[in-house]
Figure 1 (cartoon, rainbow, N blue to C red):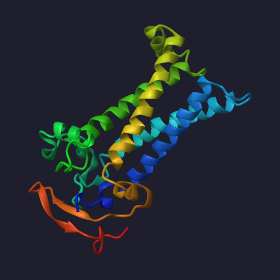
Figure 2 (cartoon, rainbow, N blue to C red):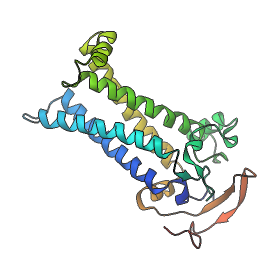
Figure 3 (cartoon, helix red, strand yellow):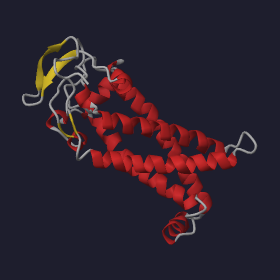
Figure 4 (cartoon, rainbow, N blue to C red):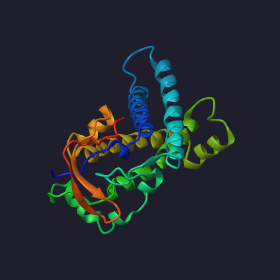
Length: 234
């Protein structure tokens, strides 16, 4: 088998739930954002604005929950392993990420056939995942600068004046949406480049067999044909 096994320990259920809340909120924010920018139908603006604000809060609060859970919920830091540790450690440099930036670039561009032996998240994945909370915060605050009930508050009014007025703030908010759209496509690509196994975990909670990995020796140690072990069913 060419790829590491995919176990549920890599993506515990709380993180699967926050992942899908994130996705649903992002999709609806993008759709309502496009409608607000390009109103195609009459009499829907109120609904679109209300939904946009609601899911903006959902996205922001869900991000805070996910960050907090990272310190309390354990997950596997490696593919092909059931070893677990506090999840936040998976997003920072690990021994298995060293000197792999170039290798991951080549792999994603189909210039390298073999999957780099790495931690659960590759270098590019970690960089993008660490950037997303900051982008959500910026997006949330630029949205509050434009929302009627909050746009006159001192902090938000000051930020709007700082960037050059409401129109400039709208432009910033609008183009940040394109950053999220780009991230969504890149994330889908990075997550599915190995095939359907990662999607089976996230959609169906179904494990997939493959190579097994030992984080203590940082190497492949065997092969699991089924992806299921006695006593690990969920």
